[in-house]
Length: 132
Image 1: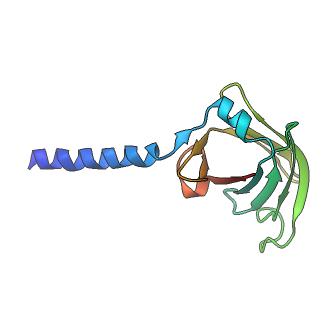
Image 2 (image 1 turned 180 degrees about the horizontal axis):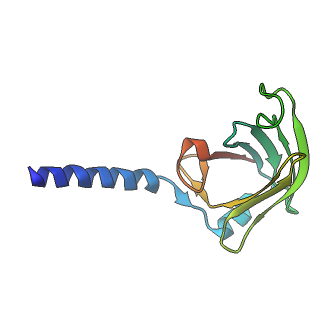
Image 3 (image 1 turned 135 degrees about the vertical axis):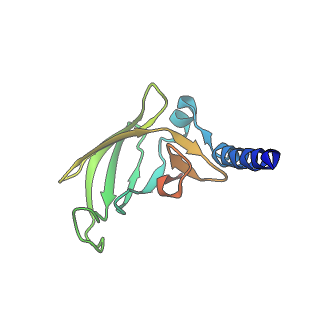
């Protein structure tokens, strides 16, 4: 019985590793080559949908339906200029001063199957879309 329990536990651990292993951390060089010119769609933790383009010069203009501070229905779209970069640790960084809050973060980009990308870990809530 004990052997069976260890076998089941081992299978669970292996399945978890495979799920995380289905996405690969993009290197700094890969990000520097890939990100310029990409159009980005991201839904933040508050449910606001945002769009921007990673301009080759490191600038961006982001828009959001602002569900956190604006209309609960997301019917009011606001935008502001900001910047993006890949830092020395190979993380994608986003910086925008919205009207009500400053948003500045850096995250590892994980590339999943096909054109699926995640911020920091494989989780549907951490998904980010990059399109050329």
